[in-house]
Image 1 (cartoon, helix red, strand yellow):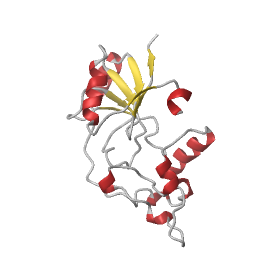
Image 2 (tube, helix red, strand yellow):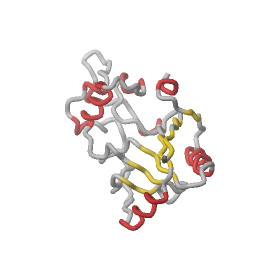
Image 3 (cartoon, helix red, strand yellow):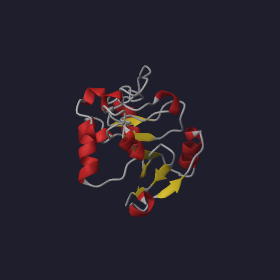
Image 4 (cartoon, helix red, strand yellow):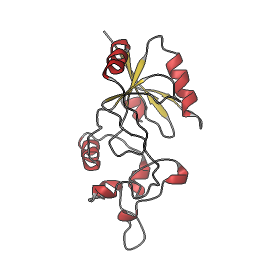
Length: 174
């Protein structure tokens, strides 16, 4: 449904997202950028800025983080305001999704009857990651020269949503 509504190409990948990203990157002659939903406080955000290079263990691309400084509430307001589809796990009491082994329903959303309220019902945004085990963040700082070089070489922007599927749409430079 989302693929059709937003005219996206969908790639379903296996357990190795790096391999799928390497394929996507290798198919393009120019460096590319991915628009991501990374926010400050996300487990792997580190010191990323609005523009950040991929991690050393990934193929080379530029990360574009337009919602870096949004709150949990801002994300849900945006999704609701524009009727944007999202993963159904958020309706089951999850507020932060990671791997199966480090993600659980948020205890702050547990109701008296043992069921869970949906993620958008969370009022104390500091509890957003209460259902996640965290790990130390990495430094992903990039020099202004590196940022400038990568932005000047980028000719295409793609969309990547990592979960059970990788969705990709592109807008070519005109």
